[in-house]
Image 1: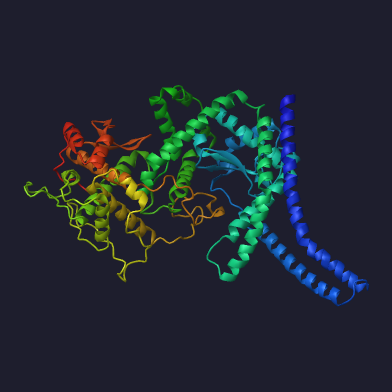
Image 2: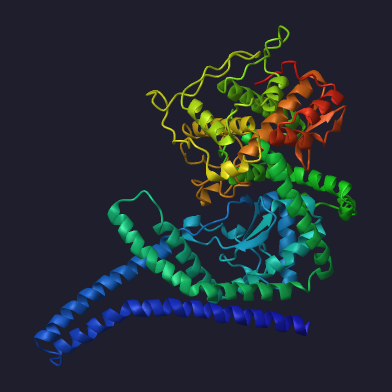
Length: 637
């Protein structure tokens, strides 16, 4: 224990020394601002006493006095901006003590064992991380009520109650995947950080750093007049200068706080924490896989899975079944999960899921006809089937734009609908005079500049072609690039000429659809939490959502990836409509095709062979083995 105590003391001393260094920078900046005023006072006092007289001294008094007024005004403006700017707040879902008394009790007991102040509140975030966050700025709303300002409750000693205690932010995947003991072990070093955070010097240094950071963001805001921009540029320059001066000291201060917290937490569940850290890495891998492979396709279709945390448990359980390295992890599921510490875990999971959709995809704040929740039992029909048929319909619309015939001249009657054979024949046939990929892309660009007739599908008339930019009735949309970028050319260099042309056409069509979807929906303020429009994430009023998505999951897809996805969707539609296959959900790989109840895993290489070499032989063999008839029309949306 002596070693632990020494480590805690050393870390705390290092953090305090760095905090004092930050405060000294603040004091020096104040001294520099007061220096012209002090000189002006000396000159004025000298003139009034008859010591500093004469024309030169009078001119100096005027110059220095005016300079002092200007410097003091600038310093007051900087101080006002730093004090009133709203520090950044992580988007979270607030957890009231009434909705999670057991969780608050566990955190309270943990703070007692660590002998540190308890956090003022608890919040959940759709991320695999946990931290303390200060939300005592006036812009973040009024302080909590007296009987709820501390997790500790009324029975705790008076010195433990503090309105300035930070908020404990917990990653929601931890609650659903970890057991209660594991969560307590993981939160121990986080809760231990409230001890150093309560020191006045460290708290003052952190407030100063957050104020400078918020001032830089506030002065960088656009949409102001020239004079306001000029003033903002000056204030921002001073704020950035002070922030750069404090950068090293602030980083070392936080490192000292972390060292002190980690040393103090060693006395609590140290052995269990080693095991729990393995679960942290596993939860992160499963959460990332669930968001990118499962949730993202649903968000693109206007549906948001309402039980993401339940899904991460299913994904990690599936991973433990497949991966021998994860053996034994699923055996923990018999113990009490940490989500049992919540009174209504389903409601909390839904709020966190909606917040994740907003952060990672930029979805609306409330549900509606075009943004509705979807359960895991409905995912295959609502997301997978609709995604494949939508992509297949887009693929045939682009083929129509390119002038590709719907059926061969010797085709049987009734086969002029959207068929897989049309796609295979187009990509496999390469006439001698076929243009190069670069010229093919230019041809697509030329056809995209004018509306093309869109034939009817078997489900009814296709949607009208988008209005041209010259149409006065068309909404104002940003201009789209009409030529492929060098990166797109490099990506499509390994494909055939017709594959490159089709990929360029699909990319342009997707860009038009995204532009049309963004034009009518100008940014609107989110509705108040708890409105009748649907579930909303509590606490969303504390953060600025005008730049959503804040954390995009993936970079934009390349033309090759878009073409591969659309051909795969067309193949899956043909398999469902002609061979009795069904859409399915794989927790680790996302949408999957089920044939006789078994997930197919060998479709990808055959599609890539068609895209890259124009050889449909492997894919046709695969289709024949499953009994898929590519000449039959499929149902589109």
